[in-house]
Length: 234
Image (tube, rainbow, N blue to C red; front, side):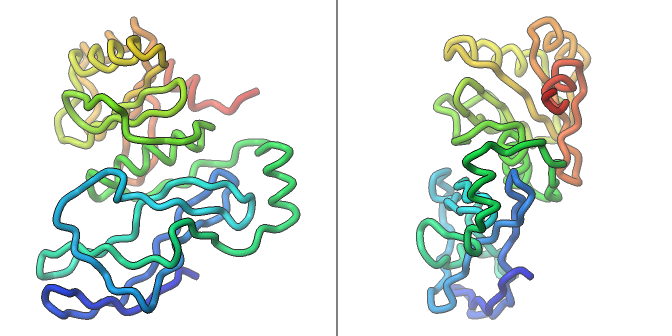
């Protein structure tokens, strides 16, 4: 069961009962940040990518990954960052089965566990989770900011996440491909609103996997390159 605790807004003094979010590890086990019951929440006044993530270690397989820092929206309009115990948290004790799985490899890939998309941040989180599910490690913000959306990067891969209500254009796809070429990386595109027909044709010719993020949080492949990436390895 998710951990919960009372959180008082420092701006208006309203009290909320906050439940820690749970995220699916690649191994399938849930991972939750341990909340600090003695710590005070802070108000988010500006966004910085590095400040929005926390390193958590799975209690089943011992993998360490970055997940969104727990936040809470107050009715007064303030966004609160909930205090977390420790900078690198562990959820549960590491079992012998989990440790041996980490040493011997992840085995057959489990089904992707979606997270409902309600905000632009949720869309970026889902894309990062999906890339980890595919086997990419050390997901981070890309060095170069794309013309639209958010850029994510991993070793050998550049991804663009477009959470806007405008279908991705041919130019968007080409810009991603050109940036990936300069970094000698593969690339993949995630869009919440889909793609213009010209964008799909261009992606097909350039070999770019295209995914649509539905509101349930499941990336849906929309071309053959994406289907090949989504298919389990033989």
